[in-house]
Image 1 (tube, rainbow, N blue to C red):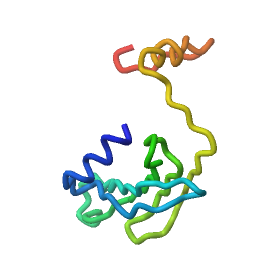
Image 2: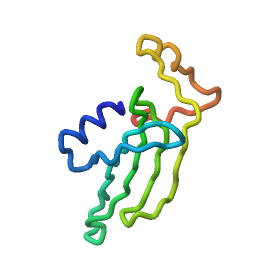
Image 3: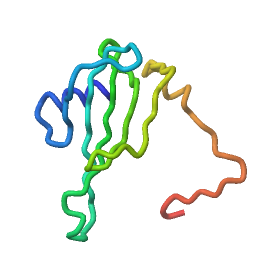
Image 4: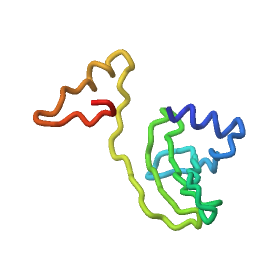
Length: 111
């Protein structure tokens, strides 16, 4: 829920930052950065993080671009969304329902 991420940033969540209002490929966007901190017991990992920056259309809150960076700022990947559609909640369950893959083994815990 990208609107929810924006609200987290506006409310002061330390791991979600609201950046500049800018434009990407002609879309007016909000820049939202989510910090993913290392969850390792190794003390050397203290302070390590990845930053995922989402560029979200200001009118419809759909994604335009996502950039993944190291804590030092080096980009290690990005995705530009050419076409994005929102599925109404009432249709989502029906449209996204999947049958088991033929020949797949269920690896769920306890099976």
